[in-house]
Length: 213
Image 1 (cartoon, rainbow, N blue to C red):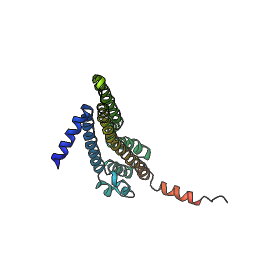
Image 2: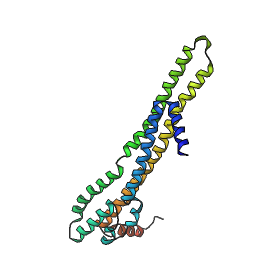
Image 3: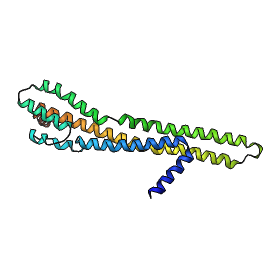
Image 4: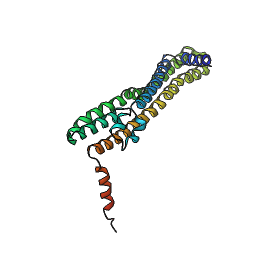
């Protein structure tokens, strides 16, 4: 099974040339980077951030991730009498550092998603040039199959570029959406820690506003 896959990849690289080899390396890098980001999100507790709502200091101390650690430190400082504004000034840089770790490497994934189609197109252009040159060199005895064969081989690089770019682009969008959701939850939880009950009071006040007839 593995031997057949290696043989197929080698044949594809031989068919598409160095551009396909570069795209193959880019695809391996994109997969490795995606796996690493999944592990990072797991280690930072991104999947469980909503479960931090309402947890006390001891419960937060047992959770993994920069958000739980920051909230735990804020609760301890708040209980020690530190003002909310001072806590916010200390907490926000810590949170931004954590979000920086979550975002690390995503720009490389974005680069792969943007450059892979261009590399594929570049390989196609090179292949078309080679095909037409071979057709010209054949002279009066030109065989249309030479041109057709050269064109479909050239189009392999375009297809390879799209195959690499589309999953990378989807993975990037998914990671960005998870980071944005984690950021919204972090903002809400930090505000609840700094001003306990403020969000609930705001919701109660909005419910007491009479609706227009």
